[in-house]
Image (tube, rainbow, N blue to C red; front, side, top):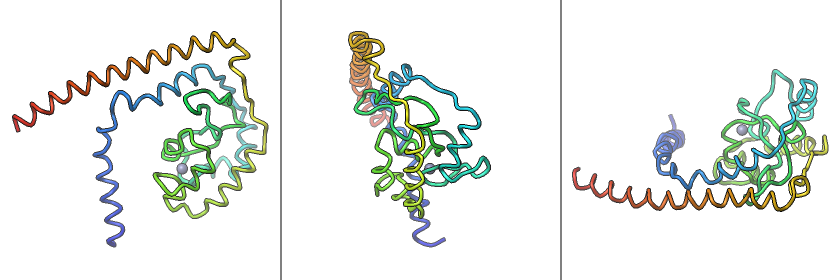
Length: 201
Ligand SMILES: [Zn+2]
């Protein structure tokens, strides 16, 4: 093993130990935001023909289906245009015109960022940062996919009324406030536990 490889391996193994630190109550905020949005957003189940057509626009077949962003095995389908921006729905829905095969790593890393900016980003797990060799070609395919079908974009306020939508987001705000409060209490308890562990070890 070369020095570079063992450095990389060490970084990967050590990265696991960062996980418990991020498992806070407030670190779940964006999951809650996504849940509040996806609870409202319609899902249109594609036919096999739709999926086959989408794959062919991306240069793939059933057999060669892989992550559109990096080429790794597909574990999920990602919303190319995000459903949520700035904690509010964009109006895009779950339908084949807005879904591309992805791997978990890319899906997580991309989050709600615009796909082009994210793919070219040199930080985190973005394809360019990970040294994916054919990023430009993948971006061309995704541009073709974007032009393939006009995606549905719904106006929630127009459908359910501005007041109903405001009430719904008030529930969200109340929940986030409760999470903030719970985090504060957890931090205080944690400080006492840490102090007690320091005393006994
Ligand atoms: Zn990927």
